[in-house]
Image 1 (spheres, rainbow, N blue to C red):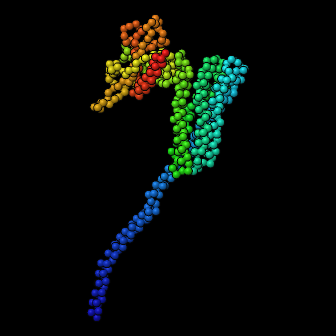
Image 2: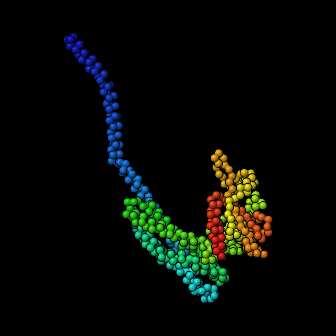
Image 3: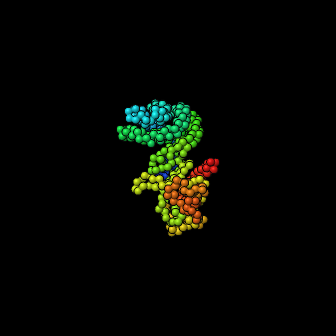
Length: 457
């Protein structure tokens, strides 16, 4: 019996000892293993996700998102072009409805000598020929927009319009000088002026007559830019991409070919426009005169180099340089004089003059014609921008009277001979280095052309 009890006690003790040592270890280990396994399972799931959605697919998804956005932008561009074309055709329709349709009637009823029948053809035929091509473009764009989708093709519309534009716009630009000269001639007749004023009073939304003559010139670049932008927004995988790329190149090539003619027509129109904006303007509209440049510059009297109050508007033509001043508080420009360009010498500003101007302002940048140039020491130094023109007042030694049509030329005499045969110095300050270079380049070109032409004569 005692042996049996001792054996039972030993068994319980052993079991208890085993439980006390094994049980805690088993609980902790199972918990750790559980969470460790869970983490590994989670990481495995993440790996599975990345393996099923690799970098190529991610890039494709992003590209697809960009492509979808570009499709939206392209659709918006088509909508904007439709709106612009509608407005353009509305302007042309107003021009022909209120001016072209009533002008012959006005001629018969009011003044048979106001203008000739052929004047109507010269003024209205060039823009009339544009209407059909632009209507076709507008109709096709509207129809295509109604079924617009991600794979929509537009290159065929732009290509057809490209072909239509070729002949009609070449004819339009060729006829532009005659149209402008005809308009300028009629604008000097009271009957025509009354006719245009009557039309605009009856229809206040009408713009000046010249606006409609010039309008098509300002729109040619729009189509090149639109086609180019459409190509940029089209993915290389898009079915229309190759055709758009080819069409864009055609538009760009033609734009480069036409640009000089467009600029020439616009600079010719500026002569017409300026003649009506400047009171007593001597620069008449001629077949060959073109307006090249205009801006407000500061004229400096050589005897008063620190007086910066003489602000003038200078207008440079391909055969003439005039300057104007504003009348009082109004914006109306009044002609004040001509600067002779025949055999004129163009020079940079004299260093002594520059020093006087800087000293007069305490070495500070107080006026717009001062620039700041960084020196090697990183100290800011004031810089004055401008140019000087030296020209002979009268070149004919036998002349006894003043022959050149200059009024208030504002140049200083640089020698002691009679003022009727003296060398004049005309000093101009510009607002920036860029403006100085722009004026210097254009002036030198015109001086060379005028001097060369007069030397032949």
